[in-house]
Length: 446
Image (cartoon, rainbow, N blue to C red; front, side):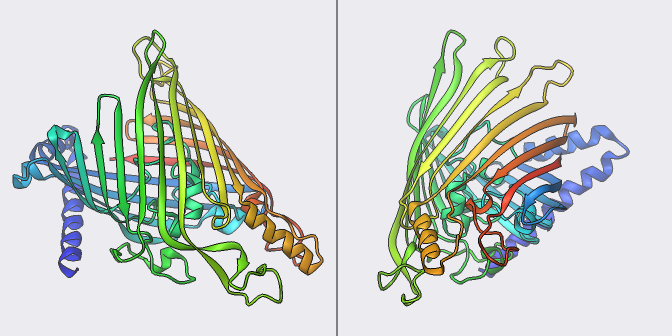
């Protein structure tokens, strides 16, 4: 373990020096930056630096109104091990986060699907740390190490513009899986296999450690504060999918249809009953939650370019939709769906600007709703019965200059927490009010 951590520290120190040195030199010689990076890439070393900064405000509803600033620096490297070490078909990737600022959902709104995918507890943490081996001319790729699942699984190529966390890693998985599943800011140890079965059909399969943090009531981000636990002994999580490429019409508009499922081998708490078979809201119960073995889920993704901005262009009007389901008895969210439209390439003056509108819907499971009704009965109060959380997001991404994006965004958050009681209400009979978030995201890429 010490050897691995030492190499990680050395790697990132070297990466920082190699990235920052050409930046400083480029101030006096603009051509030097491009030449230096090209030379490094030719030698097998690629480096990236991305900073996302957000000013977000909850202007009405939620738990309270207010504004925050949050940011995340992502420093990464990808090394071609064939060029560097003669290891044919292999590559190494690692990146780290420096996260700072407050969280609008955590501190002001109280919703399940965080208004920003950047929102996390302040920390400096290792995120990904893996090696990938390509075989059969690149048609088979095996990745081993600490990694995330949100880039390839249950993903659409048209959802990356959106700010809400559930429009990246879908809310169904992020809410139900231990520690939110392998997605920012927590990744896990695992093995991923990707196989191109034909020109149109690609299969993905992964076996991940089932949790990024040790058991216990604390926040997983606190229990694994720096991303260095490298856990491998938890009950595993399996996920698999098939992605099929399609083309529509005479314009051969590209699209994909993806179907798959996952299976977690951990035990999950029942959403209603205690170990003695009584409702958890019943004062006569022993108060110990019943546990259900295993947890399956199924999902599908459909994405489609609907219209080209110009003949032969890959820009235009695009659509995506994702849906997933899991058993009601052991999951807070039993059904989830999202979808949206992306508009790009319609301005000759701003060819890289993008506009997006999307919505999410997470249905609170029947078993969790039944617990809320039990609470009404045993307390004799009109305790809110949770039903769903839904979010509408509208955003516009403007390229100020290459490597610098500004993105105003607005979100309407319906039934925060699924319609949960407002923590500021002493009677616990009123829901958290619907919220409206407005803000601006800036992204700097080097």
